[in-house]
Image: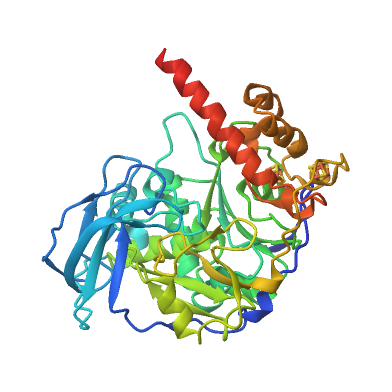
Length: 451
Ligand code: SF4
Ligand code: SF4
């Protein structure tokens, strides 16, 4: 059932530092005094508030209604009083309309209604329950899960990949979930596989997590293996290399298929779901439970006591940092996510949202910020790019504002993994320059469409 796979082209081996938190069981964080729940915690349209200031709400109650198909509802993550609905800082760096709830300290839940045997529930009901539970990918991309469970007509899904790679340095939230609750992950994956009608299920995990590989293999055995899934199922043990967890890399390594330029996994008959998302799918159908909490890794050399915690969504980062003993010395950066793809924060009042896998505290003296210099054409960025792009050329185009020219180098295929920036000896902010090129090209395309 466990198969060993070869690696993908390109990539890097950064210092992983997962040992800071990998062996530490996830703690249950005490309820915060208040939560800040952005109405946009997913890709797509923000939810629309359905509560008003002064309303009393219960845990699990919908406070934001989905505003279209590519949208997701938002639920109260504790019981209490709505004290504000305002535009507030969001982990993305933007300001987003958010609902603030002050806790009554009681955590009174709305009654939940699930199914004793979720594997007998009709597929349309599963999709509906997942939509109503407000699920969005917990791996970080945060695409509304119900949309990925309902592929477009004419697009057959043959393979479900369950992503337990967690290749970002420092992060161990998925690792802890796979160790602590492998059966939830496996039962959720069974539901997803049945809804999509796939022909096979492949779990992907890096070989730096041998205990998680064993835990998932045992849980798959416990449900009867292929009999329990209704289709062949296996666990892929993958060489540890960043960004192994990128969808395109994972698909190529596990199936040999290449997602075409500008295409999606579904174009090659594959759908990828994160292990945390699968566990949340199970909760939605078995218990009727909306997405109100997740595991977050709180770590870094700038933190007194790294660890993992089960956290109510909307909890400010400050509460987590304080729970883990506060910061040590001068802090350089606080990042939501990992060091490669995470987003630096300006305030510790920013809340944990559905896609927050970790909070990383980096000491000031660990930040290697040399002066940005011209490209010396060393080709290091090209050698590590897992997509096979020419990051140096896109960056040069951006520098001279030749955005139309940059399109020749396919900036939209960039997955923003950061490998190129990581190796550049000239400290060129290649990812930011590629992102800028994408924004400008997109703006120019939109302007042309209007005229
Ligand atoms: S790694 Fe930096 S210096 Fe080297 S080719 Fe790429 S952009 Fe130029
Ligand atoms: S160009 Fe994009 S995909 Fe390639 S290494 Fe850089 S960030 Fe990653």
